[in-house]
Amino acid sequence: MSAAESRPQPPRLAADLVRARVAAVPDPELPVVTLAELGVIRSVGLAPDGLLEVVVTPTYLGCPAMPVIEAGIRAVLAACGHADGRVRQVLAPPWSTDRISSEGRRKLAEHGIAPPGAVDAPVAVRLGLGARCPHCGSMTTRPQSAFGATRCQAIVFCTACRETFAHLKAM
Image 1: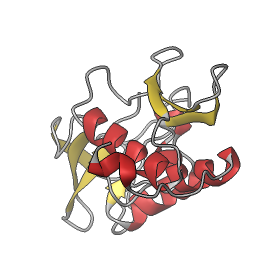
Image 2: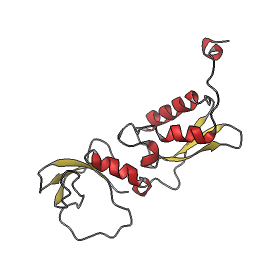
Image 3: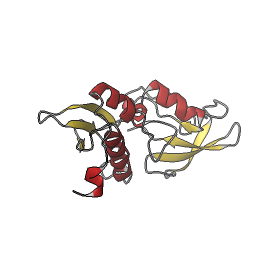
Image 4: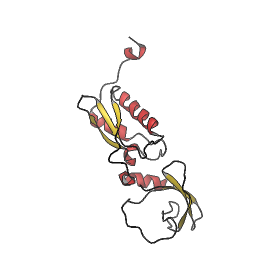
């Protein structure tokens, strides 16, 4: 018996308790929001084989943060007594920014990241990129760079308050 096998295991928590803890795992690229607020977590429950399974959908195919996300979820599963639990990725239906909760959008804006609008929202006639400035609320913004700190962000300049800010791209 190995040292790891001889350590006492935490008691197995019910799926709903594990779900709440998994939902609270922060996104590694946007740590102001949780995986649940970002809409990455699809479900947490018992699989037909009796193991606890967390189903996730990455924001991008080939998202570089997925190994960190899966490690964070596995750590929660182990802490909840489900070290044998698993994380399964599903790609269909694909993730879209519509999956970001209103709380997630509020937190993004509060931290200076302009949240995306609805994917199928009608496009209003406006100046520039049209991302609302999270600093002053102005819509007189223009794109500065299509590339931000992560693949899902762009950099936008506000002509009203002259601040730059990250904008989470709608997809």
